[in-house]
Length: 287
Length: 158
Ligand code: FES
Ligand code: FES
Image (cartoon, rainbow over all chains, first blue to last red; front, side):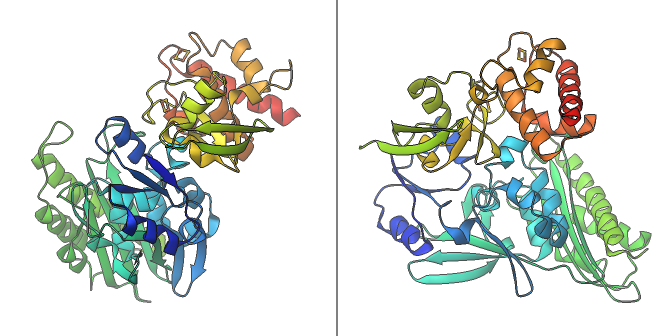
């Protein structure tokens, strides 16, 4: 295996494009190094992206916060500007692994590893985040919900690199939250998870809602029906019931020792309701 | 394949080493630099025995490549005491019997130090959550948590 540490996005995508064997992007390495150790991934070239400023910085941008895809999760959690602007995404990032794993792990890696249970993904989807993807042909911005296509699979071509994310800034009367169910309180993987993002008007009526579920399908889902269940309501009990039912109805989970099918379907509704209540509380309005 | 030449600061000392691309920082520390205080429990990021800091950030050295360290500052358990004078965390671990076999201890100490640098007065809950990534099969954890809280108190007195 060879190791390269490009200093720019252009240099990185040129390395990816030129590689004849298997090239892998190294951000935090918390999934990749484990895969290499168990010989599930045997790259010929490792492209370490942590010397690229665009991929490791956090900065306010028109309409939101842009952060590099290789930024360590702890750097995001400890960034006051980020956690204030993106509370739901911060909820999710805080749940990824231990402190020392978060010292390395990145959101870009969490997304590109493409686990259906990745914590950051439903939170990013609910927040309406976009990702910037670069290649030798230029760059494109895509909605996060279009990146993962199935377990371990993304829409990225082999010469494409996920550079950064843009999370829209929370406006007045907006709130978001992320919750997951795990048997243990720490150091576990979501059995079911839910991210909810609400926008209310001045009278407390919900005008927009985005609901995303994790670990209940082959990839994180954006559930339009669940969001629609809240729009036009004051996020009261009846609306929360409709939200829960729509969330449960969207699930097509696996059935395994970590959670049965029925359990995941039921808990998806419960978590969606609870996350919506927290999101509502964060708007400062009452139902 | 040519080896990577790395210059880094380890426990404040300039160090140069050669490593293969796939060698982890943990392997470099233990096998190349003879800094065997950092332990390998799992090599998959689950146990925290390999905890070190890189530029002040707590990480698992088993999930880091040695080649990544060029130009960085690494702190390991070997850099914790000042000469023969133990760090207050080390003293409290001894006084309060916060270790038995000792394999988790370097990682616990390095992780606890990183916590106290950020938060000199953590609650018990904060200590427990911060150390959730450090596994111990001997002590049952309570003595470790007590030692960290006692060291924090000691350090606040100055
Ligand atoms: S050896 Fe690194 S976390 Fe266990
Ligand atoms: S003292 Fe033995 S593992 Fe912690």
